Image (cartoon, rainbow, N blue to C red; front, side, top):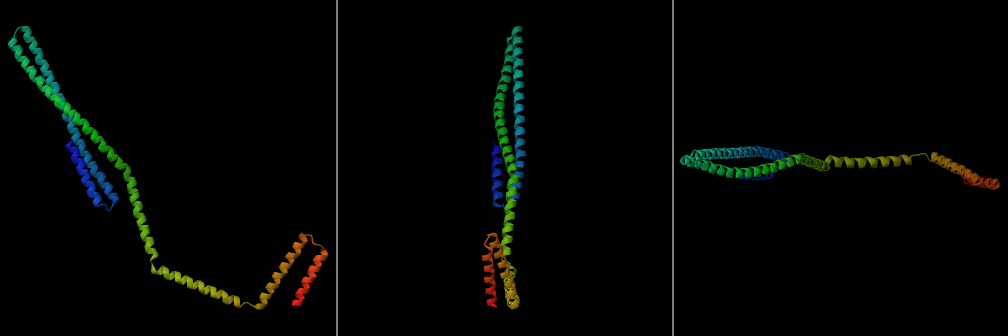
Length: 239
């Protein structure tokens, strides 16, 4: 498991270094993914080597077991032939190969356990890379939006401090003031006779509205005529 410890240490070191230099999160996450992919290739290579060693140990164990069984059968043949000395030599060979097979079996079992751990750790590393890969686009989008918002804020701040805008606002105020003065002068210059006729027209319009209103309310005609004479007399007296 030393290889995975070295990989983990290296990844942590790379990550800390990237975080210390994280001026651009988008570049940082891409570099981190690149480093993780590189380490993943190394881990896979070591796992493959470990698996090959596992298969080799298994094969050696089986080979020695086969040889031990072969010499065991030869010892049995020697016993049948009555050659005890030859049978002992065959048994000695059989025991030697059996011991080797047991040794290789022990190594194979230990290697198989280590390979299982390596493969599990490899799967975890692959899952972490997939998680980072899946979150990469979201992180990049957030980073870009943050940078864009910063630019907008700087632009708005700069725009609010432009002297020309303040001068333009003051100019608008002056123009509005000039327009108000012009309107006042124009109102004062109007013909007073024209103003009187406008007033008469307005009064005539109001009288017509009053007559229509009384007609709608069904007032007696006498009362209506009396009102009209009274109104006419008032206007004549005023002249």
